[in-house]
Length: 265
Image (cartoon, rainbow, N blue to C red; front, side, top):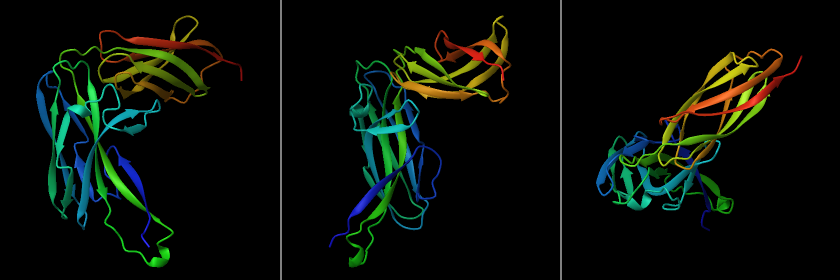
């Protein structure tokens, strides 16, 4: 009787994994060629294990959930996908221990392309088939497929128009202060966003201020960023207003806020 395998995908978006016998670098490729032109980049794969590695490469779209988790989607599904512009080779590699190979990625950008586009290569290491006793054939087992996610980004060098907005600020906790900030990238380019949280009293004086950790967004992406006052100190009783300012790298800053009341102990 044939063995029934369950394939579990372990997705790696950075660093090394003890389950992986391969390393992949870089994990992000950015191409800034002009519309109507072509560009080429490469990814290196190395077998650092003790057995032959069966490596397979596939092209996908990708997205992030509002909480920042990676979603792998079929190629060409998203309006911002550059998957239709991409060819790559090889699609599979057998690597002996210590050997390395190069994956070549070629991108043909349409002349009418506007705004940043993106895609994803999954570089997956498949385990070798294993023989199992007939008595276990009906129980099945799990095969772990380790896949590195290589993000591909076309950066529009001509028509970039970054923009963003803060759509909501919620107070999750007051001691210490913890916020949930709903931010949307309303422009047409990928941005790395930074910012600050300022707490002002009824007189407009800043009584507490701390930075937002930098976070990326794709065009059209909405993120919910959670931030906590690193001082950990409670605010005194009173009325305040919390201002959140985000710098997305454009010509202006965006701001949102929420009133805050700290009751008596």
